[in-house]
Amino acid sequence: MNKKLIYQRKERERIDLYIKDCFKLSRESVKQLLKDGSILVKDKRVEPSYLLKAGDDILIKESSFYKSAENKIYPENFQLDIIYSDSDIIVINKTAGILTHPTEKIRSGTVVNFLLKNYSLYNENKSLRPGVVHRLDKETSGVMVFTRTESAWNDLFVQFKNRIVKKEYLAIVKGRFVPLKKRMEFTVSPDKSNYTKMKVHYLKGKKTITIIEVVKYMEDLTLVKVKPITGRTHQIRLALSHSGYPIIGDTKYGVASDLISRVALHSYRISLYHPTKKERCEFKAPVPDDFLKITGEIDNSI
Image (cartoon, rainbow, N blue to C red; front, side, top):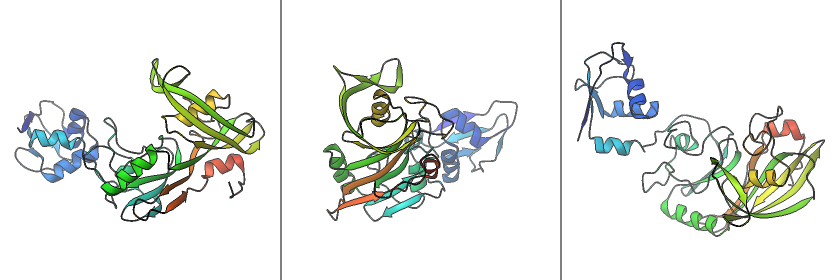
């Protein structure tokens, strides 16, 4: 059924802002619905800037479709750093501060929104995670892979599940990390006191395996290379914090820092089998400038 609203406020208000607030949609989503004619005012299409007045009737066509449109992701302009692309996969160097994909609360300004401007992504179930087979936290930068076809998604899903994909990260931690190389194993589960965090447990939870290796010492800081063998939520951040060498800039598990304005964690290298060519491919994302300002020159052989 169609949904009908009557605008009853005395003050005039832009329709895009009104609909956005009423239905918790992104502004881009509302603009597209207006453009499609899915939202009408007095049975006519209007611009997003149209100022509603008391008594205006607003028709939202096919409410069942409208509800599904809440999961529709609209393309947005943004210059992404594309490392590699073909008909199966897209590999990018993600900028810190950007979400990987939309969420129920945040529908715009994500890597997926930006990719959809120029690329198709596999999305069989119309989810908010098209093409996503792994993710990086918002404040983490570096290399990421997205899929464009069903066969590519299925292939990479199996590779990640079976630990065929190899990942390497760089992190800057507080203190002089010792020993030069360390393997950490423990179990993790959600922190009941804070649902956005994970917590180390030894008798329950999911097993994590992380290999940490020193790259360079800088006074009271250390640049480390981290290889997560498993892929648990916040695994690297938690492992380093638990080892006594928290990542700088990480206010959730690590320590705040004046040297960097985000979590000092970078997805440096990823290695996987191409889903069609069946050859192992390696992709690297250059060390970002905010790292280099702290570490100085880094040997490219890492």
